[in-house]
Structure formats: C-alpha cells, structure tokens
Image 1 (spheres, helix red, strand yellow):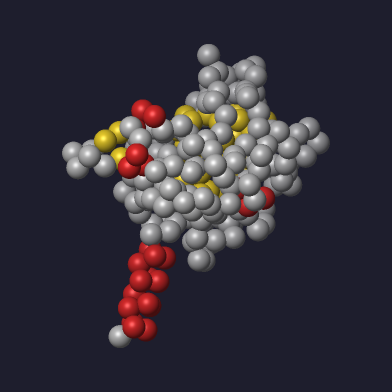
Image 2: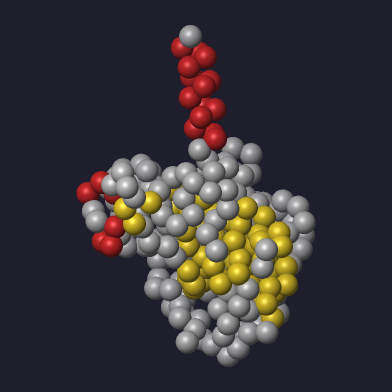
Length: 231
C-alpha cells in the first residue's frame, strides 16, 4: 500500500508540472512541439527551475530549435502548456535582441540583453485566495509584441513562476521556454531596462521568496526589471 501511495503521489506531482513547447502567434501555433521553441531540459520530467541564480533560469534549454518564426510587431502571442497551469504566480515575457552578425538559432542570450514587456498581477477570488490571469488554463496569458520594437531576430522568453511553496527559499518554481523569432514591421524604440539572466533575480527577491498568505494582492512585487513601455 505504501508503494502504491508513493507512486500515486508521484503521478499527481508530475501532472502539476508543465512545459511550454509551442508558441502561438496571432492564433497560429508553431507546427509541432519544439520546432521554433527550444526544447527545455525538463521536456520529459517537467520539473521547474528552483534556483533563480542558475544558468537554467535563462532558457532551460538543451539545444537550439530548428526554425525561426516570423512575428510582426503588434502581434498577440502566448504558449500552449502541456498541463493545466494550476499554481498561483505571475506570467512574464521577455525579449533579447540577437547581436549583429549572429542569428536567433545561434544566440545563447548571454549578457545584459533581456527586457521585460509583459507581467501579470494577482487578485483575490471569492474564496479569498490569490488568483492570477491565466491560472487553471492550458495556455499562458496573451501578451502583445510592442509596436515600436526594432526589427530583427530575437529570443522570446516566457516564464510562469509557481509560488505555492515560495515561503521557503529556492522553492518557487520557474516554468519557462525560449523561442527563436524574427520581428518585422516594428519601429525605432529603445527597449529597456536591459538585464542579464541569470543576474536579474535573487533567491530572496520579494516576488520569489514570498508567503502569499501574508500579503495583499497589490503588495506583490514581480521579480526582475520594470516592464518596457514603447510609447
């Protein structure tokens, strides 16, 4: 009986974890898993990253993807999830422009090159529990590629930070993916502030080490830089 219970608990835990293998642009998903999105190290086990200062916090990828997706500026994007995103926590989106002379398929995203363009904040539901936009869905929340972003190849990064155990150090779980994209029809904006990943997060940041039962929804502080406004 103990063995069966252990197996059952392991199966339940695995179902609570997820990956984001497909990018969706203006309602059209990439043709197959991991064709534009870089396959993550947790593609099979689906466990999230728990150390926000590790190299895995950047893209958690083991290899580049085969393709680069064309994404017009102003597009609506999201990701398909392999399981229901049922843990409380914010969804954040970042972009990193590929340096001249390189390509999205070769760029590793190192250095202070990332800027945030979308994040989510919680509310309280009828049961007086924290809830976030997109929680309990099989896709991440929608975000918009900024209209004024310069054209070129980029890495697009999504992360969902599961905070159900975040009252303990290094127990917040980061579920993330990076996709290789080519932005067209943009403008001459100057995205920022630019940060490095790892580097932008610390294990004791108030949005990472947090007891949701002890704060109000508007007191939550998403980790990382401010969201870039292209206006």
